[in-house]
Length: 328
Ligand SMILES: NC(=O)c1ccc[n+]([C@@H]2O[C@H](COP(=O)([O-])OP(=O)(O)OC[C@H]3O[C@@H](n4cnc5c(N)ncnc54)[C@H](OP(=O)(O)O)[C@@H]3O)[C@@H](O)[C@H]2O)c1
Image (cartoon, rainbow, N blue to C red; front, side):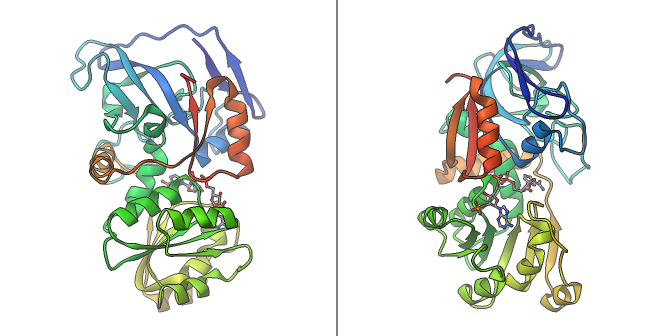
């Protein structure tokens, strides 16, 4: 079977020589149909991640069809459509801490077949294609966890138009919340409005965008999706409403952090997000099905063009998710 692996010093190499793996007890073999890229994968492939992944098959997220099952498998049958979980052993309850993940400690999905513990998979919602399902494990579930509890009466601020932010916008709109967004690009601003954002601020033209968000929201956003981290947190504190919540998700923007005194004056909550559990994933899928939510896919690359997909993602023109299709 085919597989891409991470090279010493960064980059991907393709091999066609790997044997198709067989499932042991409790495991299933999945024929991979589609995978998607996340910011973490970009760091892994370039060799800049905190865990050395040289020689590993990368990508934490993928979807496919169960092709064989080992002894004692009860969750799935041959022919079922499945999608992997990001945290393979976090099934439910509070976050147990960062364990061993696919793409770093274990081989990931950028290959033709994976063998996985039956517990680390969930069913693909009937309404979604494999390409759409492959976008869910990291970005969608992170967004779902970050906007948990958002409803009518809330205003959510999302930063940028990457995978996590676009999903957060969609979940918040489904829940009846108002959404404002930041972006660096005027075309993307139009697309954010088309998805339901009621206001968009260009964060490159307006470096102190927090003040503008306060004005747009009439006193601040009750919920903030923090994507930039240290480089944007000061503006998020400016943008958040009194008593509001900032969900700390990403660290795309380098910087000095925030003025702690200013944070105290907002009486705000800072909550860190770590994707979500399998049971969160299943609840999210129910919402996706009930609400008719369709993941926003920027572009689908064929499997052989995985390096081009990573380069496209790295350049940053994408809106929503970048997908690689094993069947294209
Ligand atoms: N904590 C968790 O559980 C978790 C899970 C998933 C991801 N993450 C993190 O969340 C972040 C986003 O992940 P992703 O997969 O959505 O990445 P992505 O798809 O690559 O998102 C990139 C987009 O983020 C926006 N962006 C970049 N710098 C920004 C800034 N200074 N201010 C506002 N927006 C900015 C840009 O949007 P525009 O082009 O519109 O300007 C850019 O296109 C990453 O840091 C990732 O590691 C964390």
